Image (cartoon, rainbow, N blue to C red):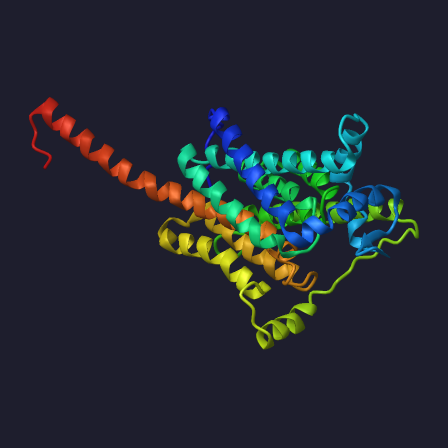
Length: 355
């Protein structure tokens, strides 16, 4: 599994594309009726996390133990609010757009740094990712961890491909302060490096992957216990709700129900992958398996109807794999043309007929 060396990125194009996609996705996320109506509560809840206080949900205090360790965005918002000039609500929107910008920028950097990918191909991938994010906005409250999740997951992919152990471990620790999905870096590493083609485990790499998971879990638990007013370190596991929620959706079908949104979310990238299936080999094939395993491992923990919970991280990986396969498909005819041109030139130089 050979990873290409660092290449110069088209920084200006990446900045423009990232900014446009950030504005568009945040506009959709913040303008949806239920999310717009709950905007004030969402802002309040960011500061409540840092204070160890309950969330406000439709005006009622509610405790969510799993949110208590997700302090990265609240810290950014609290720091920005101290500057003044704008209100907390306005700073929330600014920081939200900034995290979206960073998410798309890191994804584009991942793409353009992989196998000499052109910015045009990378832009297709970023656009597909932005599209896939929209169905995850089906939850009535904005989740400030989501764009940061996208950026961190893209960084995990790049660092794992480059086999940067220390950098990946540090990235996982930072990402843990955002969301528990940071532990899935261990799944990415294991699928890339922890198993032989004959399904024989590489114990050293498997141990490192487990260390990433355990380290992330331990830090998340410690932060949660330290900030929780009742010192609770528990986790909510409610993946079994998916069964009853799916049954309800079948009994009362609606065009915007979560199964339809899920289908709309995954169908385009699935078709893209199928179209370039011959190119999904080696490292990106292993990454695709990682995305599938993340869905499998997440499903008992979180229910599917909140699409962001189970499918956000896998969609980042799958979209990158689809983009990488497109890049390989586009490069193959060019390589063939170059070979023909080389032979034709050799024929001219030596007088030999290569046709």
